[in-house]
Image (cartoon, rainbow, N blue to C red):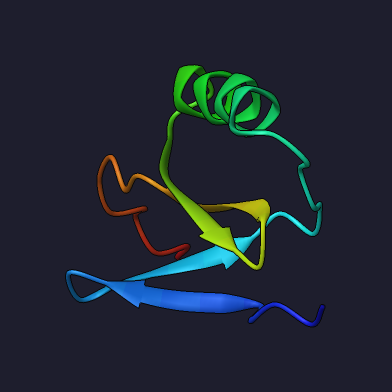
Length: 66
């Protein structure tokens, strides 16, 4: 299996976490932890395994250094 490193969902780019999860429960546990850390998460089933894709939620623009 060679999953895509990224995916676009609703115009947003998500990056694969690099792990293959055998069960939905394993992937859901990781998804919940990532959400608590401030990430948006997509859980995808592909070929009988589960993949977790994440993206950081932008909280505000960083001021440019002067």
